[in-house]
Every structure is written in structure tokens, then in C-alpha cells.
Length: 417
Image (cartoon, rainbow, N blue to C red; front, side, top):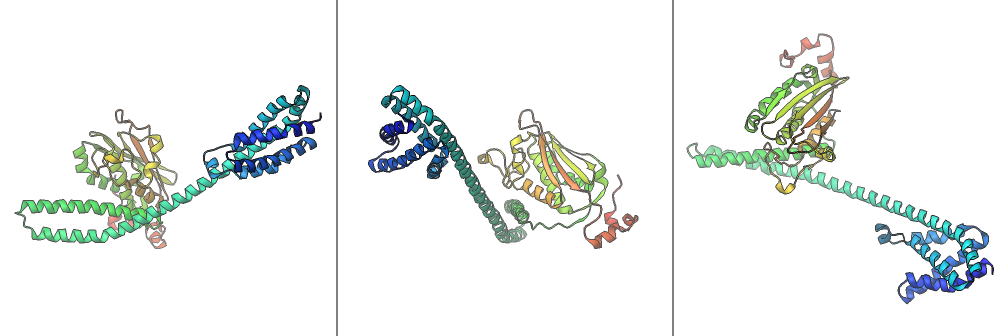
């Protein structure tokens, strides 16, 4: 008996057994038998012609018919169906045909089946990759919309809160003026109100800054700056806090700190203040914060190191994102300077935005997070060493000649080391 006759002989039993094992319900089974019949017709053509690609169209059709659930769960229904067909083909051949015909049929079917399994696997992999790519694209679109909504909320909330906050601040000031100094209780309540207003204003200002950074609206006012003056302001502003926490702030002199560069002094101070504040918060009492730096080719690098609890490698980029706080948010505290004190999680995002607006970069290095060993962290700030302003009018004033330093106003003269 030739292979075609053998295949035709086992076909009814094969079609019935496969359909019964895979399809549920009479209507479904009849429809599946019809599909399986088409497959067996093409299988016969493939065996007769020796061309296994006869099965490709129906395999493609079945692969495209996979449901969303199949793709989501990674089901390989097409490969599973082919394995069933192959298994039952050989079982029924052994049951129905004599040994010689069965062996001949298996030898004829095997190349076609192997090619079909390979094609099915390729189709399933292709559709799975396409599904995952579509899901990733959809997720990216959703994330962009979410981030845009978050940015819009921050912008609206920041501006909407600013007006009532100004009113509250004004009325609190008037109450303070009306209250006599002799009434200690009223004076204490007014002072507490002012403290709360100041903290609230800082948060609102941070929200507005983040909104400006997100929308590329952060405007810089470039002026002559000496970094050592900025460092002196940081030492003065953090003096009482450092005493409370028993920290030591060490500011080292380096070549770049004594050189004139053009930057926005207020924004640069804000960025560095956030980094020093962060170092204070995550360093146990009695720690050490060090400001150092160096000059590179066309750049000045500032480093702010601490002896704190460090930052895990997987979080060293996250902390620069909006609301990128570490730790358990349920233990959140609004304390800005106490150990592991919380905040809205905007400070480092603002710092990165300010430094990038100066065409610089900021990053952190740490051996990891450990509250016992305290490996510490080092934040690096890289700024272009601009010696002239981008404004042509200011450039003529400050950089027109070798004696331009002598033409600077007294307030801008570089201090003696």
C-alpha cells in the first residue's frame, strides 16, 4: 500500500480522535473537524509533492486566530495541535496498518511534520514578539499620558496654591501685628503659622520649578559667579542645622572654585543646597559632609560627599526622578533635615533640571545602601567652565580685553584666596 492510500485509510480515525481530544461541544467539534479536514487535504498534497510548504497557509491562518488571552498567557496552541496530530497519526497507523505500511507512512510524514512544527514555532514566536512589542508601545503611550497628567497637575496645583497661600501669609502677618508681644500664646501660634506657611511656600515653589523644568520653561539669568562664594553661603545657611545634627561640613579649596564662571547664581545655589540638604538628611548624627572639586578640560566638577547610609545601585537613577523617594512612604516625614527626613521628592529632580539647563550633568556614586556600615554617597556636578557670557553685551563688558577683570564692578571682583 502506498503512502497516499495509507494516509487516506487512517484519516477518518485521525480526524475524529484529534477533534474529540481538542474541541468541546458538538458545534465546536464539527467546525474543528472541518478545519482539520483542510489540514489533512494539504498534508496529502505535501506528501504527494514532497513540498512541506503546502501546509504554510493553514498554519498561518491558525496562528493568526490565536486569541488575546492565548498571546497574553504565552499559549502555544498551534504547536500543541501539531504534536497531537503527529502523536495520533503514529498511534492510529500502528493500530490500523500492518508494520511495513505503518513504517513507510511514518517515514513519509516525518519530514512534512518536522517542517510544519518548525514553521508553527516560528509563527508563534513572531506573533508573540509582535504582541509584546504592541503591549510595550501601549504601555509607553500610557506612561507618557500619565507623566503628562502628573506634570499638568503639578503645574496647576502649584499656581493655584500660590494665591491662597499669599492671602494666608498676609492675614497671618496682620494678626501678628495686632497681637501684643505680651500675649506669648498668641505670638507662639502666629509664629507656628508662619513656619507652616514658609514650608508650604517652599513646596509650592518646588512644584512650580518642576513644572518649568518639565515644560522646558526654566529661564536662567547668567551672571559672574565664584563657586567659593556659593560654598560660603551654604556654610552660613546650614550652620545651625549642622550644629543640631552634630555634622561637620568641610569645604575644600580647588582651582575651579576661585575662577570666575558665568551661571545663574540663584539657581546654582538652589541646586547645590538641595544636594547638601540631601547629604545631611541621609547621614546619621555626627557625620561628615565634604564639598570638593576639580577642573577638567572645559568643565568644573563639584563633588558633595557624605558618610551616610548610601544608595543602592538600582536606586541611583531613580532618586533624580520626580517623587523619586526611597524607603517606606508610610513612614514619610516632612522633616527636611532630620535623619532620613522626608519631603515631596522634588529636590533632586529640580537639581538635575537646573544643572542640565546649564548644559551640565549630575550623578551619584555609592557602594550601596547600609545603615550599619554607612558607605556614604558622592554626588558629582559637572558644569561648563564658561568664562564669558552668551549675551554679546555682557561679553563686551566682561571679556573684551585682557584687562577686563579690572573693569568689573567692585562687587564682582574675585576674592583673594
